[in-house]
Image (cartoon, rainbow, N blue to C red; front, side, top):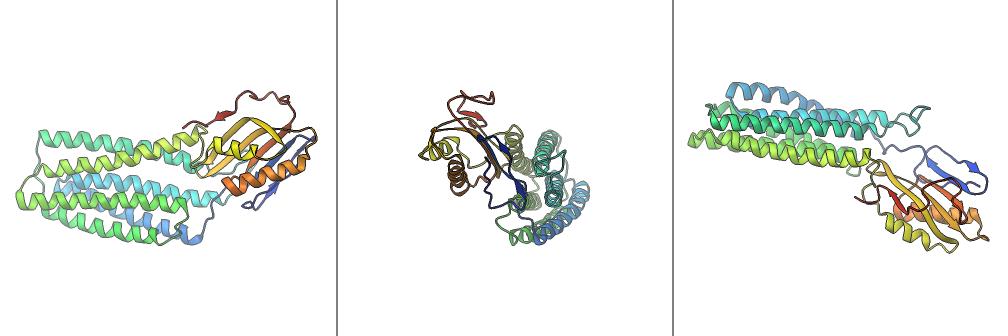
Length: 329
């Protein structure tokens, strides 16, 4: 007996397995993608990538490690914006026989790789800063100041472009946060240039570059941690297995539930499967209707596979385990 409810799916289907196994499958796992969001990410990427080269040249000419550090941050953010743009494009693709969930997880894999790249950039900045402190290098404060100020304006423009877009689009919000990090890096370079210009203390450049590297490491850790958690089938953001269990057990016909698996295709797209033990006289279709309604309305879960059974576990699943996939964070 099959029953399917999904308020966010453009295409869905259900499967019947006797009287006990029902799937609720929404195959449109993509976020709502608008041409406006895509266009905003594209222009922000062009601005960021274009000025990155100016900072590299300026950093080499002026001898400023802070500028090179900010250029490294802009490189990572250009890559992030490019991956956000690719994610927008791929999210419109339909699932196929080899990728039945579609292409949404590409953005998670891309984020993981980008996070590792951020770690490498930060380590290089730390190493270079230590070398600069041990072997001081004269820094041309004026060219450094000009490039840093121009970089600040570019980052402000890119941030405004993204910030005025769809505030509910997580892909767009993530891109805006990356650009905000670039903006702070430009501020650090400006402060270093001012200190050098008025005091001649060249050590300000590597010291403030270390602060910029700290911002990069913080972003890298957050990206790697969240993406790795998702790739390891961890519980999605805001999902609580205990709360889901309690909510479903309030349904009168349900005696217990087990073999619970809660994971995410992306951090914002929860998937659920579980076994429901119901009373012998229960109307299976009605139980499924109530269960799917609870999952959708209280937890925003629109892709769930629920199996109804008696006391015995019919499929050989992990029936003794109540919390299994990604329940603990």
